[in-house]
Amino acid sequence: MPKNETNQMQKIVAWSKRRGFVFPGSEIYGGLANSWDFGPLGAQLKRNIRDLWWQYFVVGRDDILGLDGGILMNPRVWEASGHLAGFNDALIDCKACKSRFRADHLIEEQLNEKVEGKSLAELEKIVQNKALKCPSCKADKLTAPRQFNLMFKTFIGTVEDATSTVYLRPETAQSMFVNFKNILDSTRVSLPFGLAQQGKAFRNEITPGNFIFRVLEFEQMEIEYFIQPADWEKYFKMWEEAMSSWLDLLGIQRSNWSVREHQAQELSHYSKRTIDFEYNFPFGTKELYGLAYRTDFDLRNHEQFSGQNLHYQNPVSGESFIPHVIEPTFGVERSVLAVICDAFEVVTGGRGEASRQEEEVVLRFDRKIAPVKVAIFPLIKKEPLIKAGREVLAGLRNQFKFMANFVIAYDEAGSIGRRYRRQDEIGTPYCVTIDFETLDDQAVTVRDRDTMNQERVKIAELGEWLEEKYG
Ligand code: GAP
Image 1 (cartoon, rainbow, N blue to C red):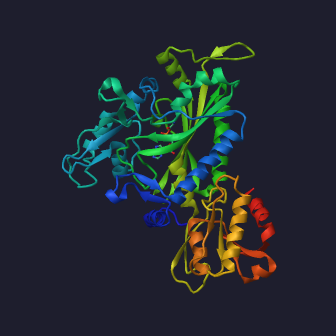
Image 2 (cartoon, protein in one colour):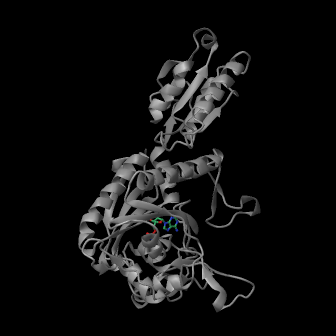
């Protein structure tokens, strides 16, 4: 797939809307900047990714336990975690056109210089010395950079004052630290072990954008892996490998992602070492996931702020200490965007019919995450083919009723070529056609999305054939 083309991104955004993957949020009211809604196929794709992750990292391992914490937490959590004081971006306003920008983005885009971690004074000096201008109106009326906290605030109850202020969580991680003692008290875990959580997080991003890449409301899938302090390098490596395997599982091509080490000045306030898994998006190589060594920063601070003992006692030696933490973190929207970008292919000149001149879109999703697993078509919209098609559909629905997310589509409208193209466009791996021969030989034609090979399969064996493909 050609990369780094804005054109490609425009095609992806248009396709997402046309085929019901992602819609602009609140569209009939003119939208809400940088908010997106997931349509039927997008919601299914997202669910498939979340479920695969839960299966792979939680159900399939015996050292990780699941958790489902609340979005609203006691505001003291955010004092202890450092988010109230330190989860800030420096922003700059344009006094002429009132546009607002992240200072680091503005400088990086105009000077091609990395400035993450620089102080407000240092940023201001760069803006002044280089006489930077507003990217929107080109006026040289930029304000000095100032800190802006990224947490969304809301209020509990009827009074909107400081005592009723709560925050929408900016990361899911904190519930796992705050529940550490409950986990030790209610389960029989011993180190090393992890807690895993999926759920919404919110950030009042100043310059969101690039479709669903940076949004205000998104989902995270995070693991806090508790370890003996001396073992951190071993487990950092273990998680780097596990995250790489996850990318393979999603079907993302190796050549399209890479790992980048954070420089000291870019490390988050809690991290001693961080690497980013970066994906080669059409708009540039950007962070997809992160892996951080959070030391004992969070548990130690929560112990201090809450006054509760968050030490772990080694069951053999009796030694008591605060565990250290390795944190693999995954964004759901970024996963969706990466698998779409990776799978999106525009074919010119026609795939099925050589005479076709139009562009055709094929989504080469890995079968595990494809939103629709198989589509059933009677060759023409006439009896007895419709009856036979509906029987095949009912048989498969029954056979796969306990296989989560096994979505089966049925389509009898339009030419068979058009129906194949419609399924290719949403990435359905297999299409099953019921034709006149089916009535005699009780077999159907199964067409493979990628190879376009067609295979004759007995109806009685179709379920087993699909089971084999989907494992
Ligand atoms: N608990 C650590 C943490 O939150 P982060 O790097 O700030 O670390 C983790 O965020 C992941 O969440 C990112 O790697 C990315 O996949 C996703 N993410 C962060 N901010 C996002 C945003 N504004 N929109 C969409 N996804 C975002």
